[in-house]
Every structure is written in structure tokens, then in C-alpha cells.
Image (cartoon, rainbow, N blue to C red; front, side, top):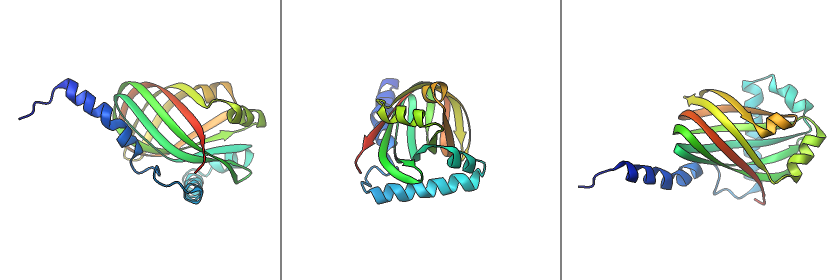
Amino acid sequence: MTILTRRRFTLGILASTPLLAACNNGVGSNGAATIDARVDATLNQMTSLHPNTQTLVNKSTGMLVMPLMTEAGFIFGGGFGRGALRINGVTVDYYSATKGTVGLQIGAQQFAHVLFFMTEDALQRFRRSSGWVAGADIGYVFNDRGETLRADTTTATAPVLAVIFGQAGAMIGGSLEGMKYNRIIP
């Protein structure tokens, strides 16, 4: 009979976090057409669920659309997703997002997010940057009803707006986080 200790439980969660983060988020889909189809569906869902976001779509100089971010955590956590940068409705680059968190947190969730670059300068800074976004996050998600209070360096220092929607899962807590967007070739 195996006794489950706190140490084994914690090590098991930490070992499985990358596997959980990769579940059902398109990691195995290398095709640009697949990512573009998911981006189109995400934008359609966002504007139908939240019609006021159409104004952001029209006014932005570019959008980074991440159709599905999957994250899981127990004290330490991680997340992953793939998406596309669109300028004037056309995909110009593909990106992956890798997220790490630490704090009082437990659970797993999936969500979509769109970064709206409201000025040409903000868009160019993002495209030239190393992609790191440091931030703090306090939030909860239950059954596609989520509320999040978020402050990060992207929205705090540049005219960039973030829309997070379609939350599903169960995650609760507050954490410090870091996210890196990497340009990829699908």
C-alpha cells in the first residue's frame, strides 16, 4: 500500500502541470490554417458574446488573438496556448504563449484572450520586444463565469487593452505571474 505524502502529492502536481497545460489547446496542430480557423471562431464568439468589443476591433492597429489558453496550478502553475497576430484583419505572425505562476492558487482553467494594440507604437514595441509580460493576478473562474482583476506591464505601460473571456474550469487564488509570447512558425 502506498502512502500519499504531501511531498509526493506536490511533486505529482508539479510534474503533471506541463501535461495539463498542453491538454486540448492545439499543441499538436502545427498548421497555420488550423490556428487561423480557431482565431476566426474566437473573434466571432467574442463579438457575439460582447458586442461592444467590435469597437475595439475596428479601432485597434493590431490584435493578438489566443483562442485557447490552458493553465493549471497548485501553488506553482503553468499555462500554454497558440494564436495569431492580426493587422487589418490579416494574420502577419503566429505566437505561442507560455505562462508561469506562483502563489495561493489551485485548479485548472481554459480561456481565450485578445490583446488589442490601440496605437502603432504599442504594436511595434510588442513586435520588437522579447515578449515578456510580468504581472499580478487575483481572480476566480467557475463554470464559464469568471471575474478577474488584472494588472500587468502590457496594459499598464502601453495603450494595449486585454479582453479575457470564455473562462471554463475551476481555479481560485491570487498569484504572481509571468508570460512570454514567442513568435512561432506553424
